Length: 278
Image (tube, rainbow, N blue to C red; front, side, top):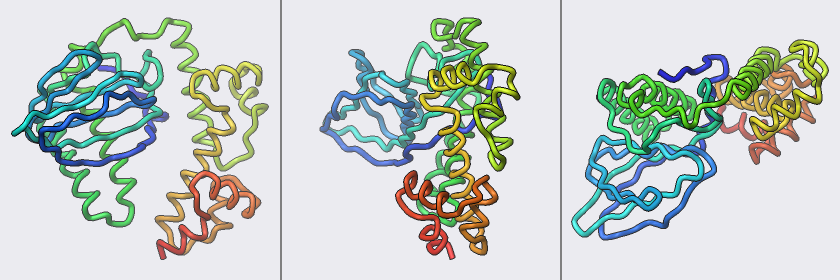
């Protein structure tokens, strides 16, 4: 089984939606710059992946790596209900970031099929009821889907070494995991490239360059995202907390600066979010 680092396993969920399509219809050929999981809950659909057309029956999942072109089509009389999940920030040990090292995008689970589709039902229920904290529940359930995919013997048979990282690249990946682990553990403290450098015994320049190569952003920007995500969760779960208290708990002594950052990232101020959840 492909290995996950429990300290850094934190995929960013971009969207989760379900819909029913009825033929005849054909969608546009497209690809994404993130991972997409498409799950055929019932019915059947024709998928064109690259230039290969395949009929996909119910209870089949499709995993599209970034850059994989695909589209779906339905002949007259065909229909299907699908659940689509877009996500990124996935790291599997020894595999490039945001990649599943499988020889096929089409997966038919065996060992964990029933459990997998029970989780899909739970996701749909969370979306339909939208109780407080439903977005966190959906993220947890999507993470469970990913683990079940990796556990299943069907995917272990599809693993390929073609996408595996070289030893040197794996060493860099381990370093990135150490940095992320450090940022998660110390997000409420004063953190700088200098403190990271002292902790990892590496130069600040090297840390900054490799981290940006692997994640697409600087360590400090990554830290900001961690802090703001923690603050957002705190504000949504605790109606009694103040903006200043939330700022302090995630490492910001200046509540005004924290509020500006929060609004920049989420499009609304922390006080607005707090009012909505009181």
